[in-house]
Image (cartoon, rainbow, N blue to C red; front, side, top):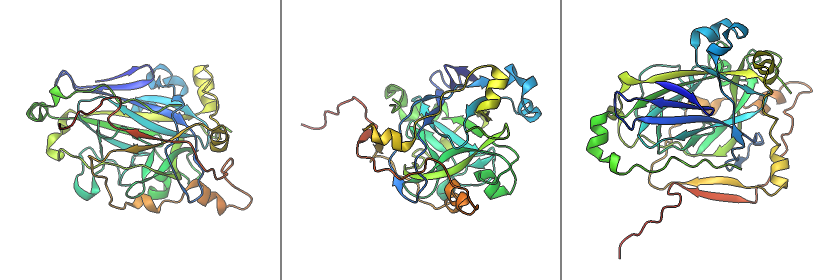
Amino acid sequence: MIELEHHTLRFSFPEIHRDAHCGISFMRTLRIPDDDRTYPLPPGLSRFPLRHVDDCAAKLPGSWGRHGGVFLPMYQSEAMWLSFSGEYPMAVRIAAGKVSALTGAPWQDQLSEGPDQDYLVIPEQPWLDGFFAGKGLIRQFVAMPLGEGYTAEEQITGEGEHGGLQIAVYPMKAAEFDRLGLDRDLRADNVMYCASPASGPEMGLAPGGTMQQEIYEDPYGIGAWEQDAKSRCFVHILNSVQYFLVTHEKPPTQPPTAKEYTDAGLPWFEYYDAEHKALDSPTKLSKLKSIAEMKARERGSELPHNEPVSPRNVVTLSKHGPVVREGDF
């Protein structure tokens, strides 16, 4: 079952286990410079507003009605990241334009393990900021209109057919959950770190600047997941002008630039988790061209607000939160 609550998608599987639920939010953020440098994690500014497709189906593209799900507004070249909450283990597949955000492979219903692991595991993975580009690196999710060749979908498949994000969530098998004794170790939900419109209505996600972020290996093994009990959701992206015309609601204001944010002395972030092993297999996504690279090939075109910055206020985050470990005496 999927519910929309406070602009967060809530996935729950009461038929599997009473504790089998999680949340996924879509966070507004800075677009980091796309300049061949590697940046720390930018802040979360607020959640993107989510609306049911079925509430506005008559004003939306016909294919959206077939897909169902939800939609959100983004400005052209605006960035986002995904925040995961919940302590019952879940395997989560994320795709952009039906292209895996971890491997670049086409969408499929069954999970892939090993060096081609195409899913995240929560709560071990607290967030995802972009396309996996190699060990410890991602390319930021940045919104671009379909049909101009920038999106990961178009670069890999040659077509801009789907756009948006596709999400599938698979709960851990109840027997595995009980065997591991995880019900005695449930902690509070993850704490999120916070601090010009497109020409066409439909948007996809393109690779932007590079930042430091690890994607962790599945610590439980693919046999732990109840793959027959998955829930799927299509998250459509509408440009900001069309969002207003469809919903009569103003989209959020555009976020500050990375330079404005850094000049104000506000914090950037890095995340530390020594307990879990990071994926290191290179994927076809590492060969994608970023928006700035593609614009550099266009005469008289460049990515606006792309000045390099030097973050000085970098806050280190830990998975342990406020809990103090006693250790041995």
